[in-house]
Length: 197
Image 1 (cartoon, rainbow, N blue to C red):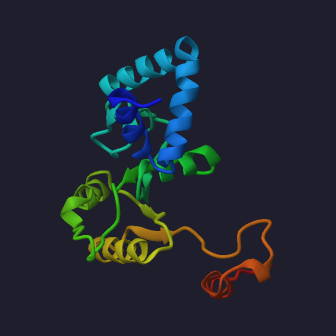
Image 2: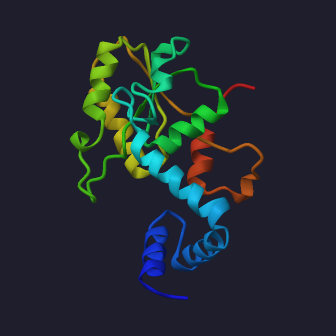
């Protein structure tokens, strides 16, 4: 089965992360076989989401209200700010229920190779929020990549207020893992970040 409509659907779905052309075709065939239960409700939900979901003007996450529900929540610790690369990282941390402060989504990381500068990210707004909200602690929760480390160092150097405590997520051996399966960098980081028993 081919045709311009099918080809367009295949092309659009294959642009999603983790979906190749073959997977896109399987998804389309499944949806076409379930038009009333899956395809039409999905289409309606996508249209509603496109109209209602927007970036929070405070933390840059996604929500249907602005400011977002986290920024509006008076029960959050308003003196702690966790900096993440993207909304998916924020959702991962929020899922744990271990953090009760505010967030700041950068929208990416610095990259000299890709030409991503601080002004293209939400770093200037982050620095403004740290001052305006009189933040006591900034938790830098960026990925352990070269770009993540570069961005973390840039943020740390840019926060000039000595009263602001700068912390980062711990790095090292994941729970349930065997040492002989870990890469050397993870083992070195874990050894250097060891703590008392």
